[in-house]
Every structure is written in structure tokens, then in C-alpha cells.
Image (cartoon, rainbow, N blue to C red; front, side, top):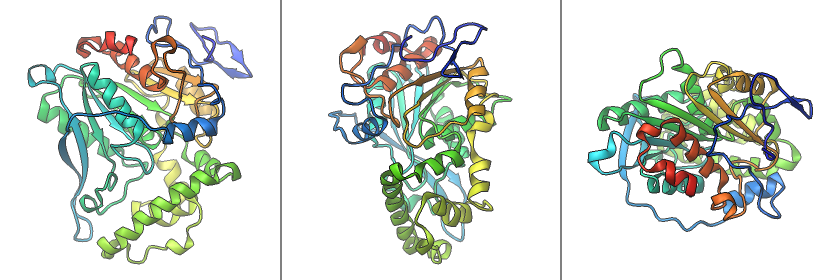
Length: 375
């Protein structure tokens, strides 16, 4: 396929000195990614994907609070807020449920989360939009901060929805930092995966944190770094007032880079020795070769700040349970294609991941297979 580095079978071809990912021969859900006109630049893709307005209307969700950690310093417990969209009760438990997890400083209302939700609901699936700790306006629900190591929160949400709704099939989809979380938790349970866990997807997943943090600080990426830092520092300021017994002496005056935030805030309040310890300890790349659930990874070579180390890439390619799609263009979490091309509405990653999920679990897909191929 022209838009991918492709390998089928045992004999690896090398393109630009890189071993090519393996593309399933029966991947009828997969179309070539061609970027929209004027968006063959990773920065333009990233910015357009974040700021282009979308007119999408969702049904009123059912809120679900899940406790993820007990009280800390007399505050708490910590809870995460999920927005649940269920199919009718008579079919709910049998339909595939897609848990969507946003990225850094996102929420359950991020555009890519809403876009995937609308598409999955139209295909007859259940959808759970999960907020990380303190995200989506939930500072009052969690005295503890979110970070890339909170993979246990994914497990708590998974267990809660399976138990309460008697679900037979669940898929996890994470974007960027959310991708690290779902892949990390899947790796942690790889020795004995839950029966209901049918598939996992990471879109632009943050699997190698140290390399990606360094890339974010490069001059051409300072715009993104400043955007993230401004929002994250403001979040800590709010918490200094809300939870003074924890954050009153937060060293915000020392923070000018993402690495410094991770050192002075995430490591300090997350139980890590320093930023390097945090980056190494929580990286889902450790599990790249041991994932035992059907997994889709969508990664763009022109992503401005997500970096995938060669050993991580090789481990993903060598894992027979992983479908690794690597595009030349696409930016970070964007993958904007021309509308109407090959049945695509312009959001190629969303169309692709839904096709993958319903291909992997057709028994619980309901009407999703036909919808995925025609959306």
C-alpha cells in the first residue's frame, strides 16, 4: 500500500533502512492514508486537527464516577468521571464497548474523542469517554494529579463497566498520553488478559517518554510546550488553593520546560525519584513485545514531538498481535485526509481504528462492520 511501509510474511523488506511494518493481507478495513491538500506538513496537520471545528452532536451521556485511589492527606478519595453512551439494554451487554482515553491536557470533550464517539455510536457500539484524574473540569473529584503512569485507572474503569453492565467485549482506545496508558495496562495484564478485553488501539501513542519530552523542547516545538505548560501550571495553581496540605509549596517558579514540570511536580507528587525515573518507569514501550491482545498502533513519521525509539518500533513490528501502521504524514493525532476519498469523511485514523475494532471482534460488533467500511 503506497502510504505505508508494508511487510507481509516472513521476509522483511527495508525502506529507507527501516524494516517495514507487517500489514495484514485481509485488512479490508484499511485504506491508504493521503493527507489533505496543503497539509503535508506535520505541524499543519497537528494544528488543523486540533483547531478545525467539527459539527457533531452527541446524545446525553450517563455519568459514571469510578474511584481510582483512596484518600491522600485527608482529601479524597480520587475519582475519574466517565461519560457513557449505551445502546439499548436488550443488546448492550453483547455490543462492543469502546473506552476512549484522551491525551495530555485533553478531556472527554476533545475533538478526536467526540469524533470517535459519534462514529462508534452510529455503528451500534457502546462508548465510554473517560476523563483522566482532574481533567474535564473535575479538579474537585481528585486531589491527586494525572500522569502517564496512572494505568491502574484504566483497569478500574474497565472493571467497573464490565461489572455494572455485564459487558462481553471491551476495546480500549488511547490518544497520545492516553495511548501510553491503555498500552501500559494491557501489558501489565498480558499474562492473563481479562476475557472481555478484545482489542487495544494507540493513536500517536506516547510510548517513549524521555525521547518525546526532549523533542517537545526543540525550538520548532516550543509553541506546543508553552501551550501545555501554561495549562498544566494553571491546574497546579488551582490545586494549591483547593488542596493546600499537598500542593502549598509546589515549586512553580522553577518550571520553564516540560521536563522541569515532570521533575518538580509529577515526580515529586507521583512518587518518582526524578523526571528520568518517571520517564523510564511508566513507558509502555517496555511491553511492546509482550502485548497479547490484538493491538493497533497508528504512528506518523512527521509527528512534531512524539518519538518512537528503534527498539520500540522493532518490538512492535515483531509482535504478531500488533498491527503497526506508520504513515509518512499525519502529524500528532490528526491524520486528516480529503473528504470523500475511499469512503472516508476526512478523519482517516477514526475510520481506520473503527474498522480494526469491528474486524477483530465481529461477534460483538452489531451493525458496525458495514458502517465502518462505509463511513
